Length: 192
Image 1 (cartoon, rainbow, N blue to C red):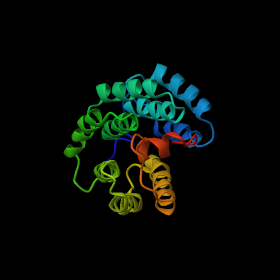
Image 2 (image 1 turned 30 degrees about the vertical axis):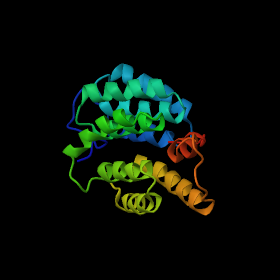
Image 3 (image 1 turned 180 degrees about the horizontal axis):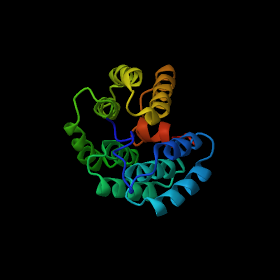
Image 4 (image 1 turned 90 degrees about the horizontal axis):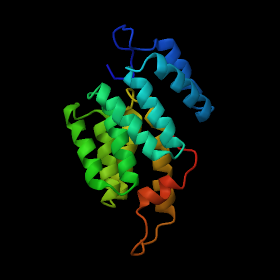
């Protein structure tokens, strides 16, 4: 069971129907979703899923410091909420904090080796190493097999599109230029 599935019924967790309504709203209005998540968190402060989704929305609004804080709160509530470890590491990667990224992603060694999060982290590591073709293959495979974290699919699709664009306009990087991950992803204003 992934951590986005409904855990055993508890007073600390929002019901699955409400959670699904909020996650569907993520695709239409991030600000509305953020307001709904804030309201739910006041009622269900111990639900790590709400903290994760709030962190994801904040990241998509380029409010990275707040997003990292939310993801850390999610992890404090549930240290086994692996998708938060992944997202926290990804935000750190976008800001060039490779050591912090790898510390977060080390937690992913606890999930099965074929887990989507491990595959995605490996694909991103390949990008960091400028192994674009291998990264592209890894990320396409991840996209095709991702059933546990569908909220990450649009992110993977955007990364793949950026790789394809880079491959089609391939030119050697100038010394001092931002790495591909930072220029391609940070320039996109419609991230999720």
